[in-house]
Image 1 (cartoon, helix red, strand yellow):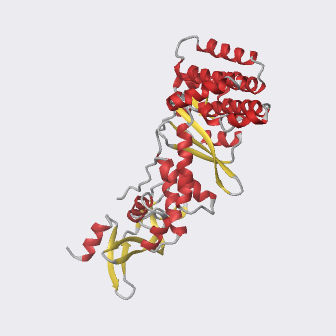
Image 2 (cartoon, rainbow, N blue to C red):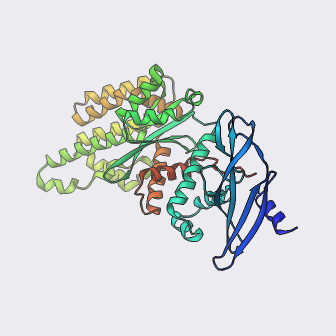
Image 3 (tube, rainbow, N blue to C red):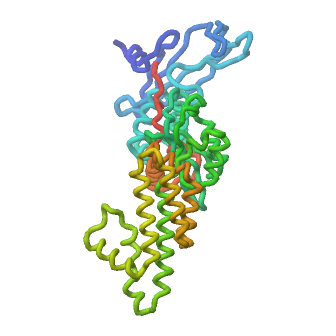
Length: 408
């Protein structure tokens, strides 16, 4: 096999393309492969009708290195003159139309970009950051176009801050931890934009949309799904439990401050024993709670309702769970403790979302995990000055996309 036939095999060239010449420049350490197209008539890229060759333009593409030598593909790309569409440039089989790199080279970059940093790739392959960013952007766009089936049974939405001063993006993901869409801001329009990127046939199969207590996100779901939204919105346990914990701390602080100074020292710094769950309470913690309950009566009452809230959320599986929640809300309001009444009002307002969350056993934990991964990605890259590049990187690493180029 001679060198021309060898490079025909390496580049996987088929008629009418063939390798015409291979030139090695030892001074620059570069191999140039000249490829030609001998046909006088070629199919139109749009209508595929055979058309006469009009002229040609020289172009270059970076290919995978041959041993220690950087390899460049050179070709005079024909233009045809179609009767219907005019002068058009023929697509080459080894690269995308807008790319200056071969398909094999881009696949190589995509593979290593998921394993190492952009800086390492830039140094190793002597590429600019802009060049690598263009390859990754095309890969993400390609993956989104190839995405035919999306799992949308349970969706999760959350916002995350990605830049200073306080620039937010809205991230929509599914139960598999796959980022489905990203939009600027954290408004209802942002979430609606995310919904618009999901195929409607899969979006209509959604059973739950887990979120925090954001009024903007709730409005977006109501706008997109109408009456069905009440069956979809699921509120995250953490954010509602946080409201109860804050109410507990406010009541505890007020009770401690109302005591004589000599007694305050005994009850000072007791916040965390009231926040511990059953699994984290040892005998010493139980003894402290029992002792504090004798003096901090209102705090003890709020703590009792907080624990009942936890038990109802995780343990109530019977049919009349809605009645159980309403009884809890009514009893909490009858205590007369204002922070607890306010928390109970929040629970009452979010009751349908709570019932949906307990029904499907969903929480926003997956979305929070994705947010942590997004922030870790930013730290690993020492930050992103360009928000669009950051969004591309998020979809590249967490979009679970098939971004490979199909070689010949």
